[in-house]
Image (cartoon, rainbow, N blue to C red):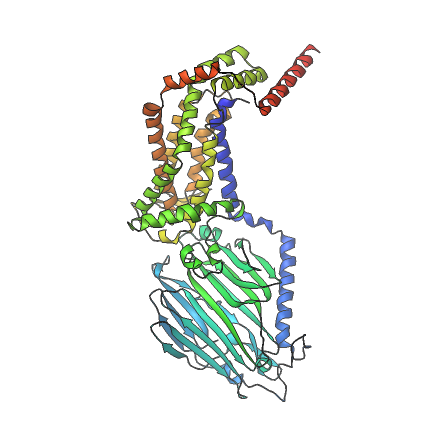
Length: 615
């Protein structure tokens, strides 16, 4: 092994990790759902859903322990809701400082939400739960031996009660026999969470069992200009048995729940819609898909959840619906792990979320309190991060300076031992030990900085504060900047030219030139040219990334170039380094056990090679 190549090896390892990271986050991750397994899972979920629905449709269900199940409807206790199958839709609007909510008597539910502080690709307020597919449904008996989904029934007109603290909208459904279903919504100012309570009077007559089988459908539509990238950033999440978990949306999938579920949600890149049960669902399943076609659908999901009812006559089902941004601070206030929906680091890189939570987010919020120019905020954040890692940076440059001092002696060893790699490695290791040089000194500090980049990748892809914020030529720091739209698409690159990507790649290339100028000559062409190839790879990797991230990378690279020049020219004294290394050579050296074992192995290998030559 040639230790002078460690700086270059650092570039290679970094490149491999980049490829692994972006491959992990690409749409190709959905291949984990094999076709056979997916079909079997879908059949199993469909069967489970059918069984859940049968518990309502079958009016002769057997009573469960602790319950007194009865037929859904009989001649003796018939229900009369047939008149509710037809009617005229009437909507009710509620406005707060954060959103406009529209309710409808058709199904007695929410019809759509508009977030006032955020704009969609069409320039209008972001719309959520606004399609005909978005609904909450459960079956009720409308006549003897006949049931219907409540989402298709027409409730009485809305009862609206307003106060400074909240607005209450209630819908009621009455049967001829006096049974009643009430859907009550509570909308509060400064809050994206809407309380939704279902009250049932006549549980056995209307539902047929002590379990409410609730179906929630969510149809998430495009909110970013690049729907392909938005789909790749979308997931479904839930809190099951007290723990948060999530799955990537591309490719689709399903999840069966056999225990308490606190909430299920659909996360887009910057927004999420979540159904919360305040008492917990007892079980159910979640099915999702993300169409890969040209439609504006990002994710569509269906949750079939069971809610146990404690009373055979009257029951209250307390739920909540969240329609809002993936804002870590906002979601954390609800105290149910919904903040984990903000993707600050997941999968094999989940550990970087702590860097974001404890360092990046507090620093970003601190700088944001002084200026709302988020380009400047990112600049200040970059300076802070570079200050924090400055000891590692200096250590790396100092190691490079020591290697540069040793270059003449390393060249002499190469000339002396020629192609004898074994002898060359042994003598080179001895040289490093005598001079007190750590051959990994330039590589390890660079590797320690990799988690920071991955943390910032997650941060800039999920930071809703950057959405719609312009800087220089970028109109939106949360999305890629484009100075020119190509009339064609280049594979892996795209159909646009990002100027921040070009500045980031150019400065990376300059860093490579500067680094290679102080690195001993590499005999292997791959090692020699790898640092130049790496910036070229970044050109394709960065072109679709948020402008905030490529701006950060540009600033960081400029700082690196400046530090390299200042430290190498004015701070590091090569004469003092040489004198110190000469002093180290005079000191007695003790070998570590690792060094002794390595040298023994090298000696054995050399003896074997010599014996083979004699034969």
